Length: 102
Image (cartoon, rainbow, N blue to C red; front, side, top):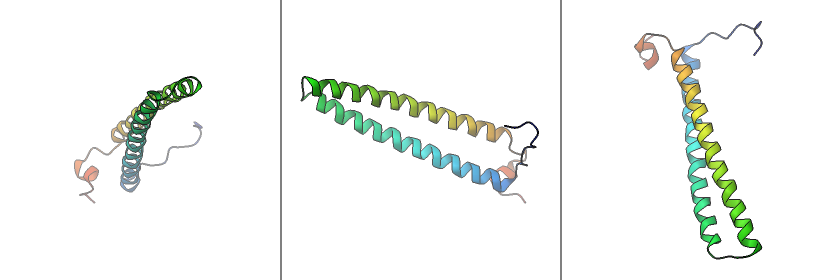
């Protein structure tokens, strides 16, 4: 970020859009994590049925999926960190945060 460029003012509309965006991002990460769990289960089932080179490939795929599960957890953590920072910048008035104030 360029220190010479002033930060955009925080507006209620911008914060609400940001909250919706963060919620969508968290939902997407949850969806990806669920798909990875399903994929991991399918690969584990395949591993029990194969041998030789196919078993090696299945084991590598299983390792890669475990890595992706860890990365999706890191992504979730980062999104939650951004959300905490956004909330820290929110106006102090609860009515404004709730969208009930003017």
